[in-house]
Length: 403
Image 1 (cartoon, one colour):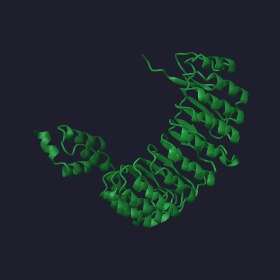
Image 2 (cartoon, one colour; image 1 turned 60 degrees about the vertical axis):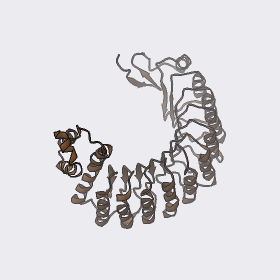
Image 3 (cartoon, helix red, strand yellow; image 1 turned 180 degrees about the vertical axis):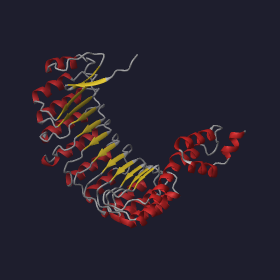
Image 4 (cartoon, one colour; image 1 turned 60 degrees about the horizontal axis):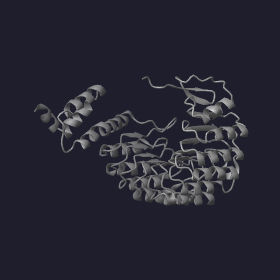
């Protein structure tokens, strides 16, 4: 049977085999939601006004629905009564997986609290997105989010970006994460967070059992957060993706993080672009790279690195076996990467991604088809340098192929 093809119409997502009139009214939509009609599998309202009465009726129709798993109401003027309706729906519905409420700025303390009470009693929702919802205008609302996270056991992704969150209430929210057991990703980009705020956060997630991704892009971080950040990297063995782009960690931050990464084999992606790390910071990474064993992606772009700094990172890459991708570009107006350095880095990336990863997987017992795989890869990529690498590092594969 052919796979169902999704097509979006009006404020629903439908399947082709269920003919839907895109102009059907609210009454018809609510009827279909109540009856679990397969023509509606998600609700989407993007920057259009949704009257509270309409939202309430939609939420009531979703109470027993087992088809819709995604609600997107971004910039739709959701207010306190709408949040109450959504919270009631979350308490009853056991199928909903994702709710996006970004850019609804009038939900109020009572509304956010009601929404979080619904989340507290829900055991299926995986994603909650609350970007740009004016938490700072409703004291106590972020605390309500923290309390819900302590009780909820299923939410995996929480997005709170583009809110002014810094201060004592954020610290209380951060401490609540110690009692959370389900979050896998939290986004706190552009939240006006200071070193003091983030230090509490880092301490609170040090032993979190599931949190694998943290985004702290574009906050107010300086070199003062370097040691708490390094401490997290030395002690945590769950975190896989860390973004601190567009802060001011400086050379000291780069040195502390690079050194901590020498003992961390869990983090796979580190984004430190636009952090004013300078030549000394780049050299610190170059020095540590040979000893970094787990990292796959490193972003140091837009740090205004000199040719000498770029060369230092390139030299470190020579003896690194884990990095598959590294970005060092200085952006418009910055020092371009010299062609000879760029060429070396590109080879080191290919060598690690295909070369070392292949050999590490087969180190104890080279399979008979390995040499054919090597030749095929070299041929496809038109890269004789990789052929030289395998001849040097795995000559046994040739003899095994001849047997």
